[in-house]
Amino acid sequence: MKEVRLAMHLSRDMLDQWKAVRNRNLQQGETVTEAVQRWQPPEKDYVKCNIVAALFGEQRCFGIGTCIRNSHGHFIKAQSKSYEGVPSPPEAEVLGLRDAILWLDNLGLSKVHIELDCKLVVDNIVDSSKNESEFGNIITICRIMLQQHPNSKITFVRRQANCVAHPQSNKGVKIVCSSPGI
Image (cartoon, rainbow, N blue to C red; front, side, top):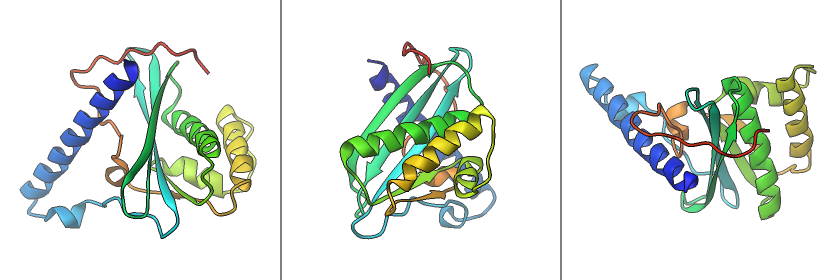
């Protein structure tokens, strides 16, 4: 039931986000195509995996959403998870990346283009320096896991191009998180 609520919430917020951007652009005299980066399909024979994290401070939990689409933009599979706790946004995003890599492994997908809208996570994955924080430890785990997938790549994408499941806020939707913490 919580997955249905999260999916409904993410869908509503995606629509609200689109409307807000469109209205802002119309007020500024811009065309929507000038201001909004759109989701782009991956190259042939690849799938694209978009990952997003959402924090719900009042409920003291966070959620991870992952969506896979093919090179034609067709939906393949999605998952959502919720966890107790309130990590920083980059920590939630890197935990989402870790979960997505494990999920992609279980699905047997090897040619994957992973997109995140958290530049800090993408930059840290690409950067080979060591970070001794909890965030850095999870980054290291993700780097090691990604080494097992030489045909995969990870890139940063602006938030509006990653809105497959990205909530802008939790207006009017009560999220119930009851999964065990990490």
